[in-house]
Image (cartoon, rainbow, N blue to C red; front, top):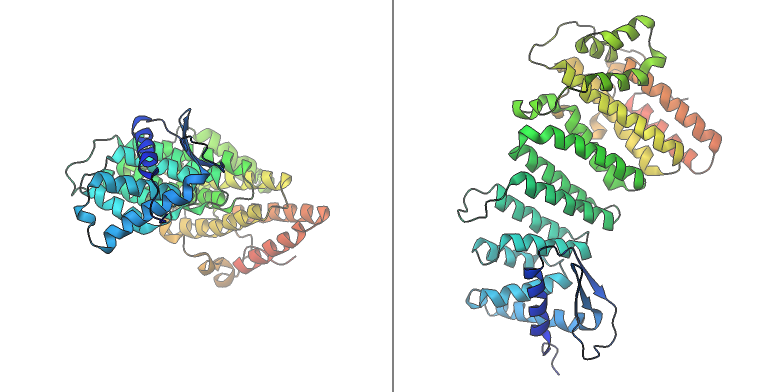
Length: 432
């Protein structure tokens, strides 16, 4: 029997296609280990889950692959019935989604209005359930979201609510991140969804951003060794810190209703290093005065175009993350990911001080590549390493963490020593 002949192929593909079309709540796809067909259908559909028996995987993939590439080789793709072509592509991609050529062919079908876009989103979702770290699937899904929400040149597209669609996309990204550790593709896709949401729904972006921040804390606490999740948290922190330098509509969505609670977070963090005079200002003073104290800003000039309450609130999230990081270190001191995240907090601290002294707020343009950043105050002004309240407090807490780690001993001591070296290179502390 020739390799490209598999009599049951079309029946299997049709069964899968019907399930994808009829079950709008389909949530998963998996390959089920079955060595013998036993005269039974290899397609399983139970409780919104799709399964395919392993015995048919190889012959089915060979069948679909040869069907597709024979058409390409003979340049007959455009003459083939789009229904047949989409079915073969569906079968091939379900089994092997890492072939970019196949996704590109589906792009052509979408652009020619041969595929239902909503069904296409559902199809990619179950592909990602089975292959959660598939870059090609994420790339195609990203293109599809842009095609639906952003591309204005295509007249015939479904009218979808951007907020609802993008909220669903966050669920898909979360599913992929949960199913594959250190899944940077999933977190990068999540960043793309956040950026798209900010572009299309700036009036509600602030609430989404803070909700994502809370969710990231829960996720990172459950996955303390996952670098990709912490990288996403760093992305969120940067977005929160630089909220004052965004558009008017986006800024206004970041409310200052919880100013008192955010001030309390700041005060608790630095109260051990402050004088009684400064403590009174931190508790009761104007937000601009508090920021001047924290950044050791000599100039009392204010900018009426800047909302200092919003700047202060955004700074409180850096402090909150420092405390979150310290809490994790108390329990998981041997996890290198947590120490690397603290490096980012050190890097961000230098940016925050420099940016505030230049603009009286934090600009995203100042978040440069890390190796270009250094505590310039040490070199130019020859001040102490802890030349601001924030740097002094951060340095004091770092020493406490490192001293505790040295007492515990073990491999985490070498991680702590590397962290100290990093601080010295940044100019945030002297060697001790």
